[in-house]
Image 1 (cartoon, rainbow, N blue to C red):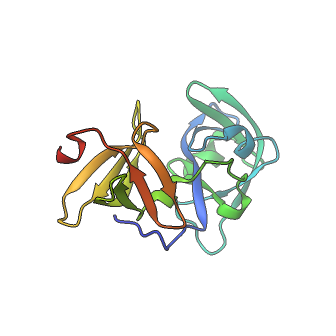
Image 2 (tube, rainbow, N blue to C red):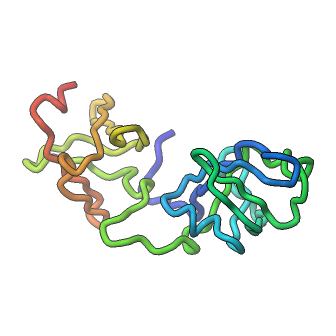
Length: 183
């Protein structure tokens, strides 16, 4: 699905409810945020989204009673969900927050959705295409860029290639090594 720059989301996904843990109402949560300690701290509130990360007109608010690290995620206990039977129907759903409730970004930080739709140009001014998707891969994340001819290119989102991200101008400037744009 191709996203457009103009349609900035009102909510961002911050976690995925993967599975119940034990019998006392804890859920294993995959945190989908760089700041899980702020989002899942005691007393924090999150919105219960659906299986696609969407929220309805009046989404249910969940209050974090407690959380703790567990393997590569978190075990989270929400207020009012006292046993496994109460949390099982939530499995597979996403946790979201309104954008205006997120901690402010640091200088130079951005949300990946802000990259969608940006025009990608080289330092020499050659138009490469538009960012269509961002893939979180290791060791470096990838930008899927759609060229004017419809072909797709994957470009590493790495400091050695990306010279600037100009959100106001709608542009991302890269300095690609020889051959990258021919792949």
